[in-house]
Amino acid sequence: MKKLLLLIGCSVALYPCTVWASPDPPLVSSTLVFSLVLVFLFAVGFGWLFQQLRKMSLLHRETLTQLQALRQMVDVAPWPMLLIDRQLRVVQCNREAITFLGQGNIQGRLFADIYPEEASHPMLQTLQWGSDAEAGAEYIQPKEPPTTLRLLQIDSQPFALWCGPPPL
Image (cartoon, rainbow, N blue to C red; front, top):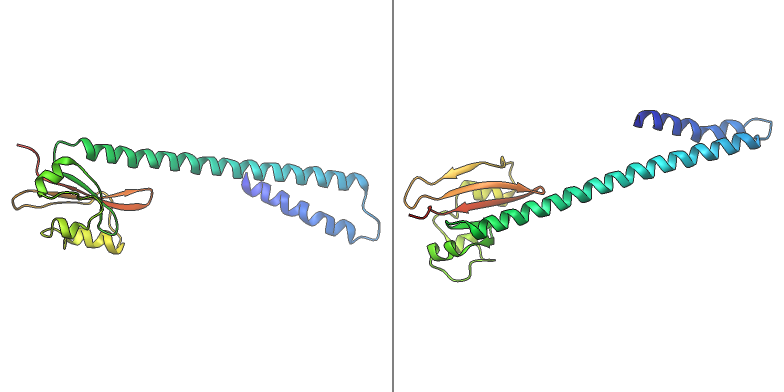
């Protein structure tokens, strides 16, 4: 359908050149038809543009709700959780994480300052340097205390979700 409209638009755009290049003056009715076709094409084009803008708006709204849902999940989780951004700063944490790590205000601080044992993990380096990492990749630390690190992708922005040991 878009190719057909493009073909019609090109032929309509070239029509005045062929008419006005002829020795006879252009007909009033052909100019009227050209104007009507041009108005129709502009209406279709603006309709398509409006539809694309609306889709983008809906996707953005859905993304905001995904990020909000993730933040709420971190807040109410019964085990320590940290949401880490690309700069390896803690974006979100819960009370259990503050208790587990034995530190005060964690939000906004570098993960390396908070938990240096896992700061040099390759998955965090991947997150920081923007290497191609598969969203959903997960690493479970085998030593005590067991922790989990998972890479996430929300609105094409990478995050890492760190989970501490589950409550006993």
